[in-house]
Length: 81
Image (cartoon, rainbow, N blue to C red; front, side, top):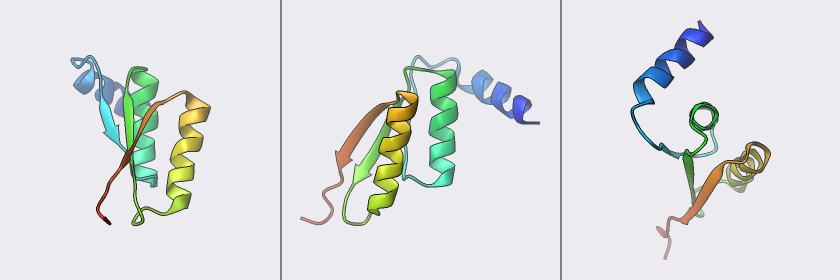
């Protein structure tokens, strides 16, 4: 089943040169980012920094980015100016 899901993901997205994935640091977005990067190493992973995002989520995203060599882009959401 897992292999079928990965194959379907790759089939659906292989037409793109690059994927951009926004991650919150939660299980769903982190799983998507992990799979997308595994299939397409050029995937860019985006994460918003703001008072509304728990520090633990940001640290988790950074740790995965370091461990798996993600191209991580941190963005200041700026909603609390």
